[in-house]
Amino acid sequence: MSNIIDINDEKSPLFAYLALISSLLLFYSNDSLIIFSPSILISIFVLGVYFIQGRLLVGIDFFVILSLFGLLIFLSENQGFYEIARVIYIYGGFSLAFYYRNLSRGLPLKNVYLILFSVFSFDLLLRIYASSGFQDFSVYSIKAGGGLYSDSNYSGLLLVVIIAELAEKYKEKFSITIFLMLLLLLLTFSRTALFMLIFFVCAKKFNKIATSVVVSLFSLLVYLALNLQDVDLGLSAIDGSLNTKYLILQSFGVLMREDLYGLLFGMGRASEQVLDAYGYIGHTVFGQIVQFGAIQVFVIIFLLRKYLIKYSANPDALFLTIMFGGMFSFFPSSYIGLIVLLTAVIKFSRISV
Image (cartoon, rainbow, N blue to C red):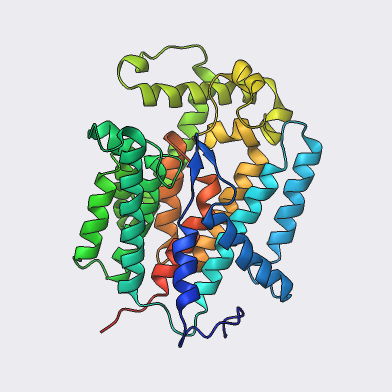
């Protein structure tokens, strides 16, 4: 099938390269995403082109999901139209994945890699500059926020996706490209991302065991949420981040026991009212259920699974890996379009001889 965006990719691949670079650029100001970030603009542009041409081939589910989220906003006074924008951005990522899959000739992998390495190196420099202006170089300045993504954990997650797809592309042979990406991953100092990479390797070889681990972890955390309310496990003395995730789990337990409507439709984003009532929200699957509701979160999980199957070289292992990290650390609900795009641009690239 020829690409439906009217660009001759064989003679002029400029749009393909510019679109890839733009799709990776998200800018923040005072921890708030700038809506005119290149990633958002290019996603909306490609989605709009497909829509105007009457061939929105990301699937009829776009209209179903958009309508569903609109209905959820109508039924819940806690949700706002920001969630509609999130759906559009996610499907923009899916549209770009479709675009790269259907280029008549895939982009050369070496060029794709050069772009990815340059962008994530730039992200590293931005994090250091935003934290210390290169004056106080330390682990904390490297790990700090202020880069292209909301924090270094998300940078780490995207690097895990890239490494996973490159490993599939190179058939698990050693490659300097994978080594350098691994170095960038280590420089995020994201423990969660490292655990996810290890889990991905295990999930590739032992898929059934990995599935059992994710299901068991989910069941265990739900049990803890219901039965360990107001119990201080002393995690704050061990690890502040882990303690925060435990408090998020407690917030989920409160909602599950006391407010079924809130559990389904969510309590909204981090308003003062929500924070006063629940204390800790967001980050994990459970914390995002408190924010957005179980319906929104499980729909996004469904979309992640569906489009990884279409575009990832190893969708089962990658899906389990993302869910594994989402259970206890962070779930990238707004980034799933970007994740699918990364899998597609690597999978459908060509290795130059």
